[in-house]
Amino acid sequence: MTTGKLVSALAAAGALALVLAGCGDRPMVYKQGQYQGKPDSKPWANAQFKDNQAEWEKAVKARTQGQDEYSRAVASAK
Amino acid sequence: MARMKFLCDAERCIECNGCVTACKNEHEVPWGVNRRRVVTLNDGVPGEKSISVACMHCSDAPCMAVCPVDCFYKTSEGVVLHDKDLCIGCGYCFYACPFGAPQFPQDGAFGLRGKMDKCTFCAGGPEPDNSEAEFKKYGRNRLAEGKLPACAEMCATKALLGGDADVIADIYRNRVLKRGKGSEIWGWGTAYGKPEKPAAQPPGAKS
Image (cartoon, rainbow over the protein chains, first blue to last red):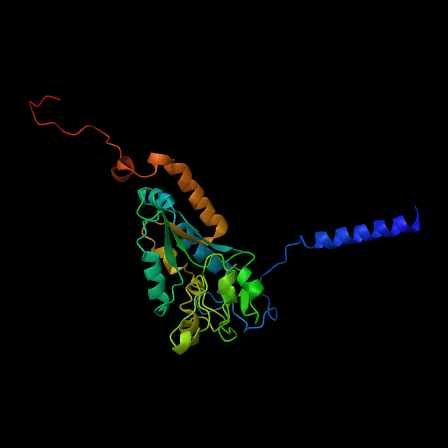
């Protein structure tokens, strides 16, 4: 392989890597210091849930299921 | 970790604007600002469809991408929130948003555009949870109370669902499978049920 071909092959590989890098999915979840504003607390970091994430998720899940009248109808029929 | 989303069922929405009213009342949203609204397609034409629209808390939110002061953030629950202390009211987010979610209070002279206001998924903002400052700037923080957005929970026909995307998608899928399609969705049989036995006849009457 001539030097010219080698350079062009390397350039093509570099360009391909650069283009594919744009296909990545950048996580947009807030982390302290990653945006300019004030920090926010977690919804379970309060007196009601006492930093218990599992308890908060359980409460929200129960509320979410409460929107399903099919399962509510079955539960009330029992 | 939950990924909070809204889902509106156009087959169920009856354009009652209960979600809009619930949101306004819950957060004491000022005049001229509508965090949520009901959009009707083919209004007045038989077969019209309505959907309730607010911030969809996009996974890759364009408002976050265009904000020149970087005042948006996304919580670990997938809720897109912003810091009003940083917002300069430029309106870029409004142009970027495909749903028209960002709202701007205009209560001053010369068409003054205030700081942006939008649906918070009832999750408040970057102030201490359920504090007076948080309520004043962002409205009530129901999520920190283990509750879901008021609009979804108040919806009379349960057209508007809110919560973990996977869970509400399951609810919607189950609903679609059970209700069928076309005339099976709504009609006499759905509203009043199918007659289990024929109606009683007066004695001596010919059937």
